[in-house]
Image (cartoon, rainbow, N blue to C red; front, side, top):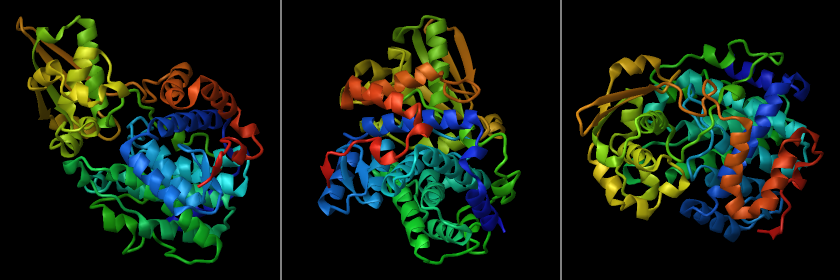
Amino acid sequence: MTTASLARFVVDTRFNDLPAEVVEATKLYFLDWLGSAYAGSSSEPGRIILNLVEELGGVPEATVIASRRRTSCLYAALANAAASHAVEMDDLDRRSIYHPAAPIMPAALAVAERQQQSGAEFVRAVVLGYEASIRIGEAVNPSHYQYWHTTGTVGTFGAAVAASVLLNLNFEQTVWALGSAGTQAAGLWEFLVDGAMSKQLHPAKAAMNGVLSSLLAKRGFSAATRILEGEKGFCRATASSYDLEKVTEDLKPSMHSYKISQVSFKQHASCRHTHSAIDATLDLVNKHHLLPEDIRSVTVKIYSGAMDLLGKVEANTPYAAKFNLPYCVAVAAIYKNVGLDKFTDAFLQDAQVRSLMERVKLVVDISLDEFYPEKWPTVVEVTTTGGQKLVSRVDYPKGDPENPLSRDELLTKFSALASPVIGLAQTGSYIRDILRLEQIENMASLIPPVASA
């Protein structure tokens, strides 16, 4: 009864059941997602999908963030999700190994606009989308992650739940929405070898398919009622080991803690698996005032899951460099930050960066595996030209709940991502509106459209 229990929880939980701190956190996660969406709107995959959406047209129901034009809720979810995952600064839940904002926020925003739902209902939808999908991710991982990009697979469930809430689906319809979401859940890691654009397609289709699943369920379109626990269901099909109890354990509307509050924010513009190494490198170079010429070699000790994903990625494009540990470590050591501006062709060709990359060695330390995915630990060892050996270990990179970004730091991050695209005035307006999100009567008023697609 796993699927049914999850659907019952979604239908029964109301906005007033959510603790105040969860509501406040959700507003910051939404703001953080919106910043990533604006920053990624000019990326090549974001532009390609945007151009396709504009070519296809659609009934004006929801806003495409990059153009502020209105199109169908399906196409708006598709375009906004793709843009928000392009710069690798959207949030990350480490236990489910999953970026929940990228598929859930655009699905919820598109349907909230279409249905002219309130900010409070939008918050409820987002919280429940996070809760359901993170629990599913925890149940199937880490084995699922070996082949499947969780943001594309589990994200489809999160988007469907958020859309179901905003469409006011009943219990049976919510079960069907989950069933249709599960049968469409997809996303394979093979694209990393080519540095291809599939990583943006995965949350885009997860958002779109989640909305589609809920719209169909609203009209009586039936689906598998045991999509999670069934013999030919999602968990058995996509994970060599899984634990269904993690989906429903202590699940009730009166919970004091929700999964969304444990999701990590990102400080660096690279894959989250690189962040512990980046922070450990920054710790050493700042503490010991190291210059590039002071470094003879760097050994980065990582857990097997990180090596499986990152080990074969070459830094041959700015986007691929976000998944290349030697590049991220070298940039951190030389420039003391790994921001968006560090992923350009110019930096890829930087002689100092290339020289230091050749001195970085990656090693799997199986003793770190026992901590993953509760922690994503990395040990960085720097040997100086003088023969000194310096060591730093980071278990919780900046942005984890145990090492949080402050509210002010998150507002600064949003401004840095969004203001180059929309200007300081609009950035400030979004901050004011989103920090009072539960008071907004109609989400369609949040992003004023300019025209229809």
